[in-house]
Amino acid sequence: MSRQTVEFSINAAEKLNETLNAFLQIDREGALRRASEIEESARPLAGIPIAVKDNICVKGLQASCGSKILGDYHPPYNATVIERLTNAGAIVIGKTNCDEFAMGSSNENSAFGPVRNPWDTNRVSGGSSGGSATAVAAGIVPVALGSDTGGSVRQPASLCGVVGLKPTYGRNSRYGLVAFASSLDQIGIFARQVEDVARVLSVIAGRDTHDSTTADVPVPDYTASLTGDLKGARLGFPRALFGKGLDKDVKQSVESVIDVYRELGAEVVDVEMPHAGYAIAVYYIIATAEASSNLARFDGVRYGFRAEGAPELRQMYRKTRAEGFGPEVKRRIMLGTYVLSAGYYDAYYRKAQQVRTLIKNDFLRAFETCDAIITPTSPSPAFAIGEKVNDPLAMYLNDIYTVTANLAGVPGISVPCGLSSERLPIGFQLIGPYWSEPMLFKLSHAYEQARPFRERPPISAS
Amino acid sequence: MPINQSDIEKVAQLAHLELAEEELKTFGPQMAEIVSYVEQLNEIDTSNVEPALGGLTPEGEKTDTSRADEIAGSLGQKIALAEAPDPASGHFRVPKVL
View 1: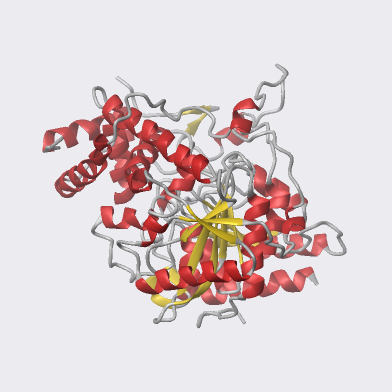
View 2: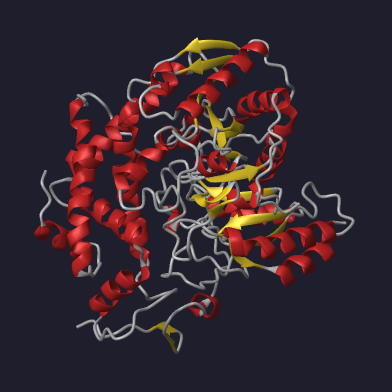
């Protein structure tokens, strides 16, 4: 049984990859072998095929991070989340395409070409975890892992019409996730249904001695929160965020979700996020600063690519990094180095960390009167490949609704809520207080039951 | 803060990046645009605001991250060198430093 399921996933991945470019590696042989061994097991995820973003270490498979500088690097160990998933019986079938080092909102920054959206292959999948979102949307796998630093799970989930969760900072281990911005990064989960996301989080969450930022907070059975009972639930509506720059189909769709919640018995209250407008500015200082430091390790000495023809050490570093990194990664390293450089630290980095406190306080204040805040996930449905590639700032503004959750460390989930007039998926986002994943699951599951998203993309496995 | 070509060259040097002529030309205006965008933060008075450093959640901050000082297994020399571009007799070999 599980062998057949895994075989179906591998066949679909191979067949659709020419069109979608969702996978950078498909492990047919290994996955089938592990599937045969797992038969008859009572483990919680026995025989479930999963796809894993190529910046998460899986022993025996590559971890390119979508970059030439790592190329065919094979990590010698498993990320903690992979260790837990495989112990629970899940079968990794392959590694998915992503923006280089998870830097991007469209997957166009992958050194191995963009992922294509299964709803319209001329459009982006979103990013940076575009391969994982696409693999789930096209029905190749029921579950996939991604990483979310500023929206990199939730935004592609929204653009591809699947569910995507970024857990609370410290809910699950980052050990084995190639670091981009360590105070923002969190491994997240894609699935078609909320219940599957809840099931996977129950397995991967919890303290890990290999990651000192994981918190000692008990892990419940998250599926127990899918009760459908919204009596007494209070949903925060940040009206001011539903204005300028928001696509009209998206606005209408998310506003109708709010009506559904009212029908389901939730109370809708107005909330204010006075500093939300500064979030992108804060994010691009903190994320690039941390990235410039984290990516210093790629120097052509211990692993990955080394440039030829540099007879002196510093020259070798510079040439290796020049040839190994793509333009967006270089731009962000440059920006991060600039904001941290002598004389600018207080003006940029410290200032950004102070405004980050104000954004965090906005959330804490809002959560005094509501259990979760609702917003669109992305200001528009999937845009065309190439459309924003020459305008980095316009690309950054795609993350306007998602980055705040990373800055504050709170959890967020994106849930599909319909199609635009061009038949492109639209998603709404719920953001809750620290450790409120049970409430996010309860709310999103109740919506999903009331308005199931049954549409399937034209490029699909079945 | 205007960013000129020599700023870009200086930052590239700090970041160990060798930029092509073309990249120097495009990065300058792009970085200047992004930097002037992020400078909108100066509108906010933060004189009495603590920076958000350290653990984000109260529970994370409280978590004891110390461990017993005991010898545990590690990758070992062979595996640690297995992905190196130029290993030599149990070491990482690099071009000459001086």
